[in-house]
Amino acid sequence: MIASHDMAIRLAQAVVAQDNFPSADQYEEAVRDAVHAFNDLYGVKAVHSISTVAGQATYTMPADFSRLIQLEKLTNMGNVLVVAEGLIPLDMSAPAEIAMVNGRTLTIYPTPGYSTTRRVWYRAVHALDENDAYPAMEADVASLIHIKAQANAWRIICGHVSRSQGWKYQMGDVMIDKTKVAESLGGWVSALDVEFEKRIARRIGTVGGLA
Image (spheres, rainbow, N blue to C red):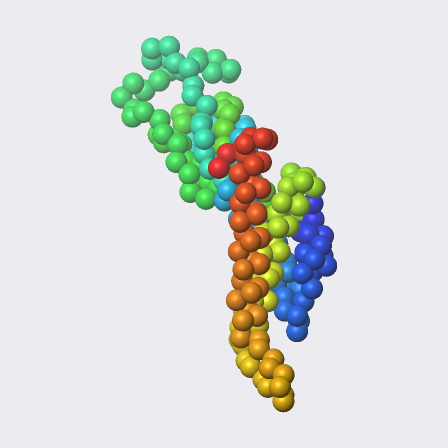
């Protein structure tokens, strides 16, 4: 388990604020955005059991649900459905069953006319729990996400610099030129973004996972 606040503190120590940019809230947002970026590129296969109820079509999936992989198929013998609870007569005129997802809501159509337990395989990602922590996240993943969070924090600083410090000033023979500062920082941001994506590609190749 990794706390989001701890990740934000680590980020603030790595990318020191310039003129109060990023703010405390922006550090937190940079971390959350980095986790979302990781989730977009990497997930794992997980399984969840749902208790279908006769007459109920919709079921709520876990907080870490990202994408449906497969709803467990039920075994039927002719016009009889075979479940753990016994044999259930089937309506042979009913259309083939399909599973649809909207957000974290799974809908089974036609509406089940039976009650049983079914497994759902899905793509799982990192999601905040009620304690503002990522319960399934380990230190190596947090370190990978930290790379993207740094890029996000520097991006905030770049925006501030480009708005407030894109100027030239000359004192005698000395020229102070800050017009290229944001551009230089932008190169550093791009390098961090590339490193983040390379690390994820390497992780998929060695540890495995779902893109």
